[in-house]
Length: 341
Image (cartoon, rainbow, N blue to C red; front, side, top):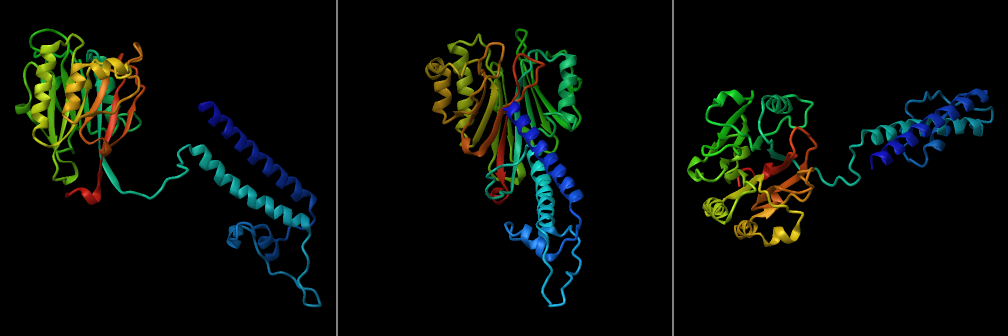
């Protein structure tokens, strides 16, 4: 796809240079470069907009003794046509090179959204933390402007103070393992997002963090969960996780759950028959991520589960390589007209 786009850009550039060259050679061969109203209308007749040639000087057309307008040579008309085509080609070339024009954009809808991201960071080292802080705070980076970032497998312990991994402009919520090493969660919430951590909905034996938020003054609370389900999970641990999610779903609110589930969505048979995925589906949750999130094993282990799939869009994976997992993202869309509903 990228090769085709570069080839198309090259063709447009060559066409533009060809038109400029032809325009220049014809101008040198023509004795009279005066352009009259008749020429402009003749050249822009197809566009049906005479003012398209407003850049051309339009002196008063001289008249013969008989009162009829003097005729214009065809060569001059060709020159004007080339000039018009050159002007149009510049606009088309700029549009093509921008590579950001929708062929069928449809009606403009005034929307806002809360951007969510999960990333299995595979041990939050000092160097990885510096990279994440740069991604969140530098305007030219992929995660700039993100509202909520969920990190799993942080490997943090209680010995590390809460302020050690603080990022300007964000509040941090952590859940570290206390029994054995590994695992752990850390959630960064932008200061402008009014969110409350619901510790009352969390359990010690389940690696999950719950947030309740009402973005853009919406009266419908949104529960956002960050989860890590280790690959060593058994039936008992899956039952505990399922019970925790069930308690949240019984509140009757919208739920978005992001995390590393360690069940390959691309292995359709295993995914469909797994007990844990059946439990999630019983809570009216749908899984949105359908691409590789762990390239080394070519699996989709990082999921986005939600109760209202139609309210989420822009589901994607970012190609950032500081972990063996890739960050997954989505946006919960809010229409301005629906904020108070």
